[in-house]
Figure (tube, helix red, strand yellow):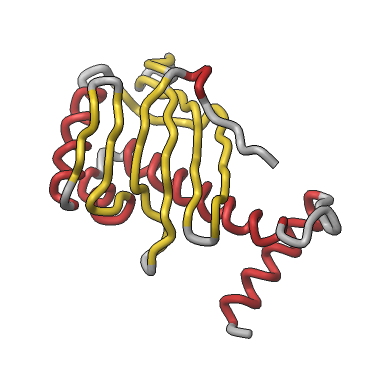
Length: 167
């Protein structure tokens, strides 16, 4: 067993003990580790977004190509530069509205296999004065790569359409 696998197993066991999940499912500890990894990738993305770091979002958060599926139709970012340009535009529009930061209101993470997960979430965007700017929602398809979890597709939708993971 590699050191990485031992550490991952130790984290999974510790998480299971802390949440009282030991014995619930033989698969659960591994799922919990993967969910924690996806959650950390999501929170890292939100920090980069709040910092206006479109370069890092294009280079370290999204895969290329990646897909943004909105009510206006699909937008495909073929390269990291395409992703950077898309985020420069969207972050720039928010900055004009005094955007300051984003927090996750609630998120559901469904691990589909060891390298694929779906995060369906609603988040809150705040202005610099602390007031709420918006509370959008979306669903993200994540893929685990040699460089960590990356977003493959983003789908914007209404908050009442946040998906839940079935057991």
